[in-house]
Image (cartoon, rainbow, N blue to C red; front, top):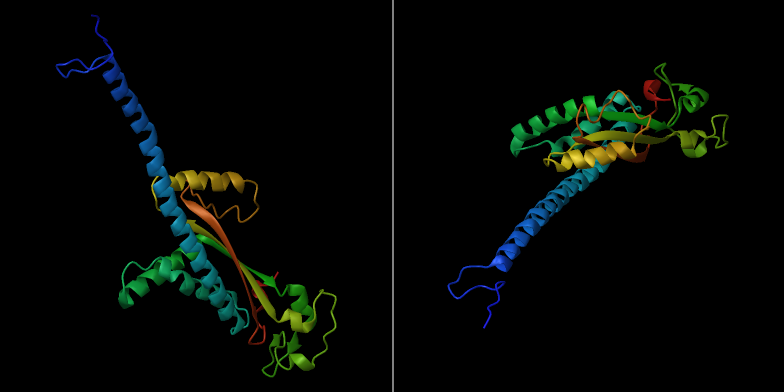
Length: 231
């Protein structure tokens, strides 16, 4: 009686079918495992990006609040942004970790962020600014309920001109190997042609940073006497 050569023989040695099955399993392993590992790393990186975006939203609000009580001073707005972003860079608890986080956040904000005061505009400031008691010209912040609420040539009233709106654009450093290059490459492809700060260079030679953007709106709590950041 003829025997089937494609089955395992009684001695336990595998025939051609057994060898082909082992080869097929190896191919499937080589294909599936890298793809699965990439998905795991990508999920981890996206969690970090979500954390960074939530922190940036808070930091932007902190920056707007700092500007609202300091005459919309762009330096104070930047300091508020640094304070808000510091938790992303603090690697250890305690005062030392907080100081280190502030230093790292300050360096990254200086190199990889862009702060714009969207409202009020310089035209609105020129239209409504008044001489204050100390001789400074400023956008008035007192008695707004009793001031004329007519819309001026700038397109807003004095009440609306006291609403501070800022926009922060920030290049977040991605840290997961390989995944950062893939996500950064797609991000750069999508934003190609964007006029946002061409000198900022989120990639700086490689795709390791992702552009994030956040807005915050608060009402001014002090006269706007520092119009240098207005546009």
